[in-house]
Length: 291
Image (tube, rainbow, N blue to C red):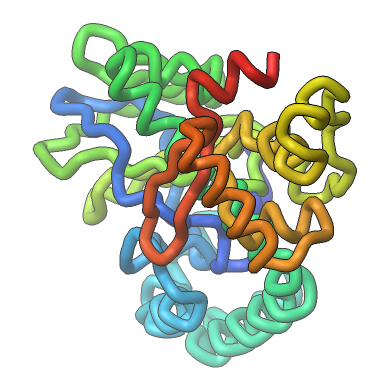
């Protein structure tokens, strides 16, 4: 349910199962954050945990109080009449909420769920990349790399999303959570003073979710390692899990796992566990060999 005014709207996500994997707060701003005043619209409740199950997210959505449903819809309308489909929310907000939740669940099942393994792999890879950027260069490097409109300035996180809108939001030790998303094209935030600040930003490599062609494998690398291992190493410029690599390269998960084990023992890839997933990434030696 999109906000009618883009300057006031939250990220346009087609379902509350929006990508949130591994986003347990990559950085914290201990000063006030500066962000545009955006209401926490009805279909955008914050995830209940860093790696939520989709059923848990829908449970949060369905538990929205009636007054919150009514207030958020009126706020989103910006003084204009509600869309005819939503006017029933004024008399029966919980009935409207149930219809919205059912529709979003259908959308999730038909459109997002079949692609979720690839989407989740891209999201986890982004989180790992951001964590490395934060460790290597600190907050200033991290935020500059996320979005041109996001920067760290004198202890303040500044988000220049919409000209003419400004709001100071004190973090007060609650941290700032960052959520990579396939469904926004710039960094955005939803301001809710009752909740810790959260920033959504475009995930790196989102085109790879829909793009199945693999990069060309250098012949010399294939001669040295064998074509399958060379193809795997070529893919690992960004972190990826076994299942995602197997799908990309048309391999069985067992075959991909075996080759990854060999590459790891040879020092050509590193691995790190993220929840139940093991992500692999080329080591510096692997980078030099693949150059």
